[in-house]
Image (cartoon, rainbow, N blue to C red; front, side):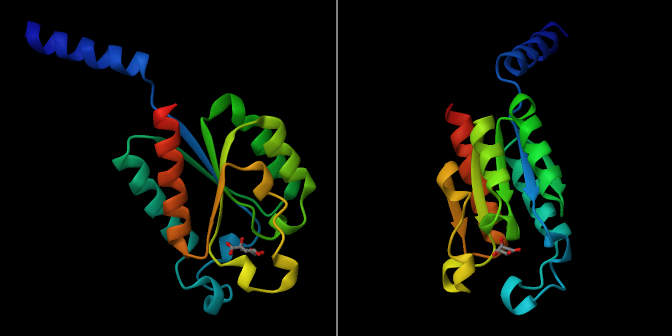
Length: 165
Ligand code: DQA
């Protein structure tokens, strides 16, 4: 009885000293259509399946995950703005906004949140207008070209980073 109480108190103390790290995942425009959208480029895996894979990793590595998808630039800017006070890190696929959005780039820079950018496809092997990411210069790192594995590798990298912080 005393031993299990002690064990409980120790676990509680570990949780207080070392609270569960929190990561937010943001999927940009049209990623809700994955599975049916240009499967030759993006594959047949749905966003729901990618999210399930991400949740599995989060559960195994004991971090909390919040997942959002938005087709609206301003909404993504708002989410990033609120993220710094609520989350330890951000995993983002800005989708088409990668190539156009100064607002999303500025939101990441302003928040200072630890961020990893991911893309399913290799944007550098595609049309020229996709060769520039406005986001890459303000993130810790970018993973691209590995399909859903880009997300999983990105999440693992973020977890490694926040757990040594
Ligand atoms: C994408 C690449 C972008 O160029 C494109 O607009 C997307 C998806 C990717 O994950 O490969 O919507 O970010």
